[in-house]
Amino acid sequence: MGEGEVISASAHYLTPTEGGGDAWSAEAASAERRGTQRVVSAGEVAAPEGVAGLLAVEQGGQVIGRRRIMYLDGDPCELTDTYYPLEIARGTGLVGTAKIRGGAVRLLAELGHVGVRAREDVAARMPSESERAELALKADEPVLELTRLTLDADGRPIQVDVMVMPPRGQKLRYEIRIG
Image (cartoon, rainbow, N blue to C red; front, side):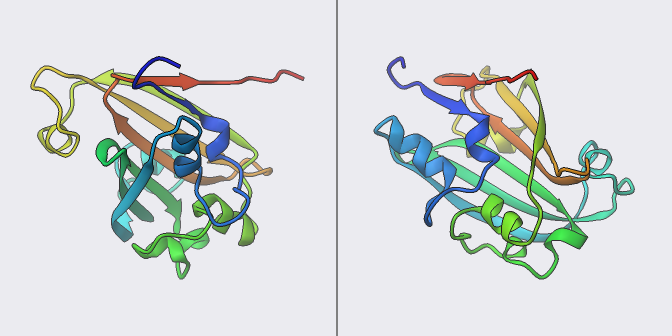
């Protein structure tokens, strides 16, 4: 791993963690770094364009949304918006801003919603002004936007994550098993 580089392996974020920790903190710790997060908001929101289709709800339909800022060694490194269908998340810890022991994936599994397949799309783009400010980016610095759709064994969508991060120091790792 290069200096300042963090390798993010998506598989770690799809399975419940052992104990009370979360995947982000564990991944950062494996690189001898400190990963923390702050939940900025949580609750019922109108599904943003793109997310509605992924969660199979009407455009502008209500979903549960959680907005977080991820920090690496105290510096903001990623903005993460996570969305859940109402029938899965309403009335659970996913609607609050408190940290969820073991993470949302563990809570979903305890509720009987286990992700078995995920699809990720990554695109480069210029950030919005608020993204630029929240991530302390330079005026000409682009971002990567990673959108992850997680499906259960019946092919039903249970979670959509939209992550925005500067490309500097990022290395995304995908392990694919065929057959």
